[in-house]
Image 1 (spheres, rainbow, N blue to C red):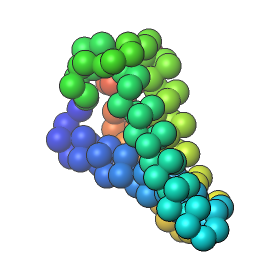
Image 2: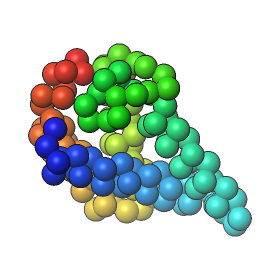
Image 3: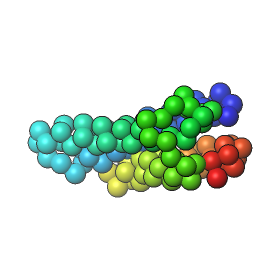
Length: 118
């Protein structure tokens, strides 16, 4: 994966966190909003970092819980596209659609990695 696509992926990871945070914020009230946002971010970051395909060149190659490529791809799609959907549900429709389109662009530019994962 080239460096520009890796940078896009990193930005999509941050956007996904933003989307889940925005959704958590919109669903809670009062000081529970802060708790909901922190909990949502911890869950998403833990899932993202915990499960990985051994020797994945787009990551460190190390994963606390090794999983098959198809499982990792599914997790990535749930988190990255889920971040876009979360923005949309939270009331940021344009941002959600933009994140979703950029996720599709990222995977279109990552055909070699998709083949490797599958």
